[in-house]
Image (cartoon, rainbow, N blue to C red; front, side, top):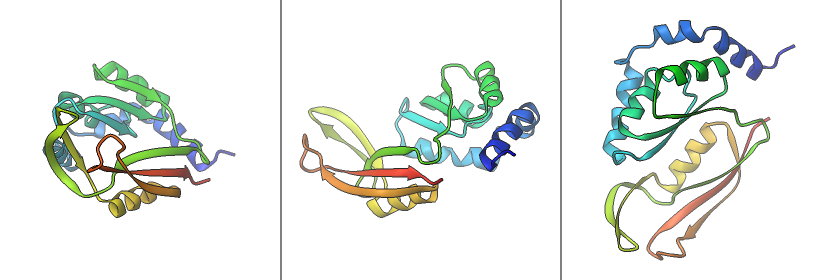
Length: 167
């Protein structure tokens, strides 16, 4: 008997081409990606988790950013590699019980262009509580979190979160 994760993976593998054919480049979810353009610098590194066949989301992201795309359905990744160039595609899934150490911003900072160690830098991140809520909403269980002052720049801080995927 297949568990829910295995059912989803097998089903997305089976319907990969059919599902891709239903996707539209101007759908509402793709239009929302334009908000990333407002917050991220061109050629920023972006992780597209749950990338599917790469169309249309990964394809849109690749026009503006350096993209690594992850999906756990091998057939979806195969389609994506055939259709979207310049993207690193990975077939993977965080296993139940898997651990993640995440580093995020610790304070709300919608957009900041400043100097960091003498070079131009761009920063954009949510506040601590928003980051923690978003991490919980993904299904990760937060084992601990800690805000740490950047040892190389005392005016900056990072939120470190150690989390585990629920069983």
